[in-house]
Image (tube, rainbow, N blue to C red; front, side, top):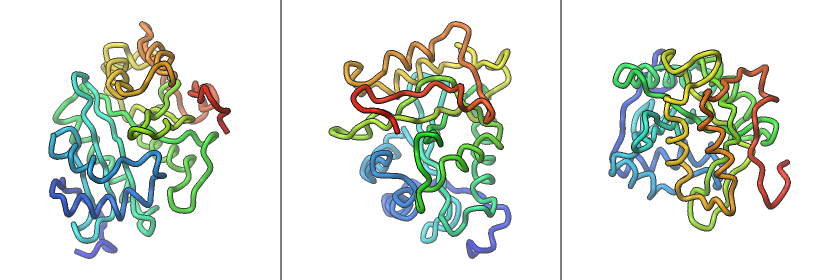
Length: 244
């Protein structure tokens, strides 16, 4: 079926090298700056190792949208590491349908799993003609019952020799009600353990790892913030240069 006529798109999981390469080239590379994008070789290796799963809407030759989900070993959480819709398909409901389908599948298979997502803070990253608008991206996730986690999150270096990305937000996407109380994601949700895994390769002497992990391990849990509380969210800043 031509992608122009997809009314209720469903995704398929892809694992072969050729399709992953095409998805990386057509959907991931145009939507993410180099410092936030893993090399295609790493994507393929993660899928083969069972660490990542890649879900695609559209045909293998003509992909329309992609979601890359990474497992965080030893924790009851997963990370929506990459999520993108092709530029000519934005605003047509393809992305929201894919995310709803993905969250429903995860909830069905693992009811107490927290789905995390990392995005650029709209106050610290400018809109980009191809990478998209951080403010619109945040509104998209929060419309689908996403919440801002009040931790000073930064994206650790993607590869050796690269810099971390500061001014980021960490979201919890439709967190299980059992793991939320009084507007907080409870400690037993495993956020601290998840972030220990995420930041495992980051040097705590160079990057604010300890501050992030302390916030995630708060005994009372981590505050869940809505869009109107964006200014209250803690922001990780580079220790070596100011955050714009």
